[in-house]
Image (cartoon, rainbow, N blue to C red):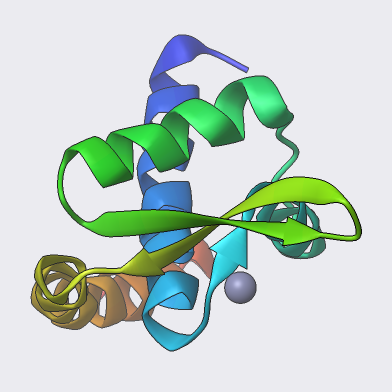
Length: 108
Ligand SMILES: [Zn+2]
C-alpha cells in the first residue's frame, strides 16, 4: 500500500471511529475488530495513535475502567466530535453516491 493510499484510508478510519464513538463507547481492541469486519487491516500501532489524535483534537474523550482485572480505556465522542461528524456526513453520502456510480463505469 502506498503512503498516499494509507493517508486516505486513515481519514476514512477516523470518520468510522468517530461514527461509532457518537453512538457507543469504543475501546482499542473492540474497534480494531470492528474495522477488520469492514475490511480495514490495522494493528494497534495504527489504531492507538489514531485514537490519541482524535482525543488530542478534542473530538473524543476517554476514561479508564477496570475490566476483568485489566485497565481498559473507553472513548466517546465529545459534542465537538458529534458536530464534526454532522459536518462530514452530507459530504460522505455525496462521495459514496458519486464514487459508487463512477466505480460502475457510468459517469454522469
Ligand atoms: Zn462500523
